[in-house]
Length: 76
Image 1 (cartoon, rainbow, N blue to C red):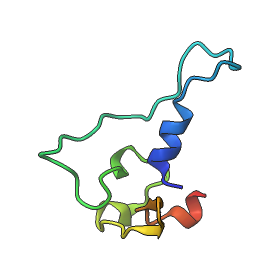
Image 2: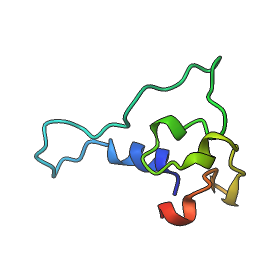
Image 3: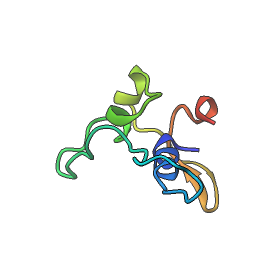
């Protein structure tokens, strides 16, 4: 459900595809010593809104399918 997970899944090579290049998540991972405020993924997220840079999203979901994204209802 999380946009980062969707980006990772899109980057997996597929044998049935003829593309030469793999999909990638834009930008660079932040330094662990300088994580941005709010959602740590917001600078690289294609669906981020202004609130994503202000508030750390709460963890939602059940068991092993938990995620932290303020927009997961829209991102699904």
